[in-house]
Length: 492
Image (cartoon, rainbow, N blue to C red; front, side, top):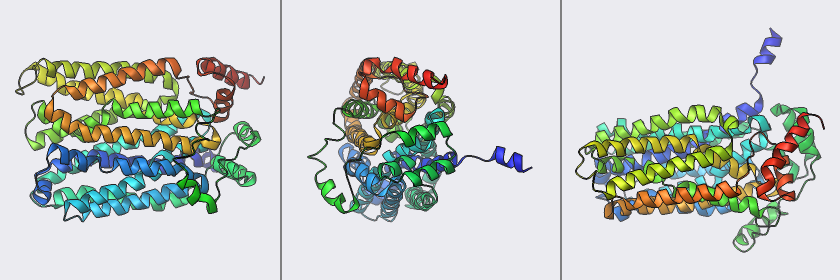
């Protein structure tokens, strides 16, 4: 019996990854909620009619603060640790969600979103960094993809909670309840993160090798990978100490020498480009404004567009499950290029139908082609770019700059996300097809750049990726990475 218990026991790195991934649910729940909430009749009764400009400003208010605090999240994580940074961010997020829930004026609602953005900027990028640092190479993609899986679960949950509460209109409870749920979950998440261990790789950057080895053994990492991690020379993560944190933050905009140094700039540039283009491909334009998009395609009633939005979230969830499970089988490069080609086709198809005036009026086959293509677009994105990009942006970074570079890439993501969130309703109000062509060309550009500059990293240890980037150009990385891993497996 004791033998069976030992065999069935889930390793600590699994359990810790599952706890941290809940942060993805929190992020996704806001994405799935804010679009439906701001189009509810009860919301407009509370705050007045929102013009396209004001609508974009309210929805996107979370993003610029997130991009700003995300710039410093890496410094905070390097000083105080990954888990502490996540706890601080989640707590601030819960305060912002509470301000939104209790708002009686639009100014308080926007301030709540700004506060949420500050908290989100602190914790979101660190989630994948932490998981990448506590998991073995053969499980890294699968477990890191839990964050994206729970983002999609959060989006679907946000849509359907909002769909359920819209029936409570004209009571303001119809839009307050979805936001109150976010506040409760975020605070609970902050408390839960107290129970998980610190990142062993972060402990190594602090010279705490004994503690790091103890944590690695608790996590259940294989001895061979543990030895490689311990034996790699430890580089100083910028020389940042707790007493120097304030001065480090003040100098952040002037000094990017670590993330842009010769040994890290290729990884930093590629991660920032990919995370920026992930949003410019238009996914959050679809997610934030799904009710508006479906209304434009002919689903006029509030309930019908909400339900259609929820169905798209379920489609995304259905695709994300197998994509997460097999993320370490297909590989990052193949999913990026194949997914990008399909996303480009979807956006160009929708844009062409609107440009040809085939959808206007909400009747005929073209309307359903647009609706189905939106579903298909969301499914392709969730099966490819959504999972691969976040993992890739963290795993290719050197240990000394992983948190800072990942947070910089996430800040680039939020900045481009703000552009999409702010401009989409304005573009849709002035042109039925301009937004789709813009998203399509952004996806096409990403395919071209990644085909030339993106090496494969699936199944390769973080230490091997780091040492190979130091020695070789990106065009030779793929073969070098695989040769190193093959040699290790053969005992050479």
